[in-house]
Image 1: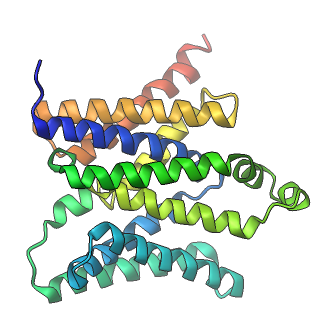
Image 2: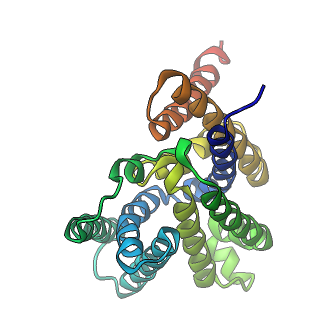
Length: 265
């Protein structure tokens, strides 16, 4: 059976995004960074506006703005200006609002719906390159620093005693998060990317017996969710991003019911 080129692109893009969000999502769940991931994704809209305004690739604009967002957050946390959740709320909604205002002022026709909710069925070959290059960087950096990142995540005091530079590891995690957000925007959109980071990892946590096992299982559930989401999106003519997230949520719900209700009988 010959698949249409746009479906092939969607599948290749979706599976790559599922793998990197699955692995990265484990750190989001372990470190309780769900609100940070959501805030980072919100700030990405300002990066999109920057890309269009300056004439650079949207992904580069997102990486720049999200990196500034992460560094500003770290600096404000060090100064202990306000509680972290308050800072995240201020920075995220400010960036989101500035992005909307900038796009409106430019008067340029931009498909905000696909940016906010994703449209994986319209991913192009150049965008595929962005996804795979960015995804490869994320996976390689995680593999190179896996032991340090896991130890810092699970036992920060022990990591410091072992000589691990916790601050630099936190910077690395935030930078990798910006890359994940940048390459995932076209697949699930700004408003839903945090869902793909959290739900497959939360699903995997119920089955995993080790950090490595959780990362592999999370990627599996992510790939399965993307596959189901693309299929039902194409068949039912529903928005691709929300359909992928709905598939991930369905898998989480079914597994939770099985483990908590049926398996205990």
